[in-house]
Length: 335
Image (cartoon, one colour):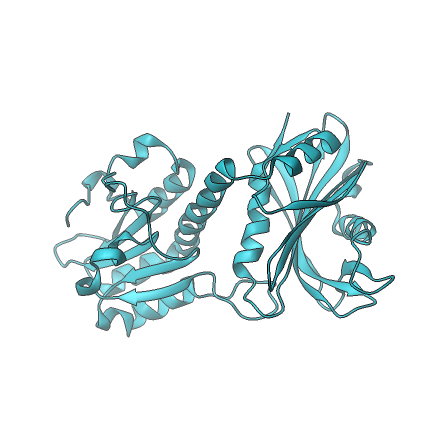
């Protein structure tokens, strides 16, 4: 295979976990030869390169199960990636310059299934993951065993693109307002405006012709571990979300009780966060959509800090809008 370094032919789990940790590292980009071309394709669009037999068999079934699995907590069914399948013959020109590419290669001379990850090979920013093995069955087994690492590698590539864009094109007035209110550095994509700014609450929104993204940040005293329980976080969310007015007089945002929000705890750069994910409604009106809320404790001030993003898009797909508010978390930096 041209450009496929044996140094990249590692077992799938190790390669992809390293890729997740090393995106942006120059040492990991040693196979770089993009000639300055700009990567093609839309966000969360994935090109899969494989033959008809593989695509129409068990391997293709596994690929679709992994990469077109529905995104949870959206109002309608949307896949985690928009998958476009092509054959090796069609892998030329602008197709080879796509932002996200997964290549499947069956080579009977190989002793086992292996994986390689390449960045910015024919365009920038680009990720190409190549899975090669002696049989379709071997590739299917690897794919099924390491589906989470594969999805994470492509999702992080998309997230890093969004973060890099925001680093260059951001709304300085919103960032300044956040730092003034909460002592937190946070770059917000250009297009957001501050709608409400109060001592313990800031609401910013980004209005599109047929959709809306928004987020609010709130802060309140930390009273011990119970402050981070699902019940406490939900009560706090409703208390602060009520400050976001709806279109009708007296209407306001609240959390939908039709489906219970999900709750999880995770660490990001050593900091513990709590996530709520669910749906919001407007009390007194007919509006709603998905939300995702991230909460941590600012140990310097001993206050709870919450970043809560929501989407309103009654006619357009919501996945990419939700991803946009999720990416805001990675712009938050505590002193």
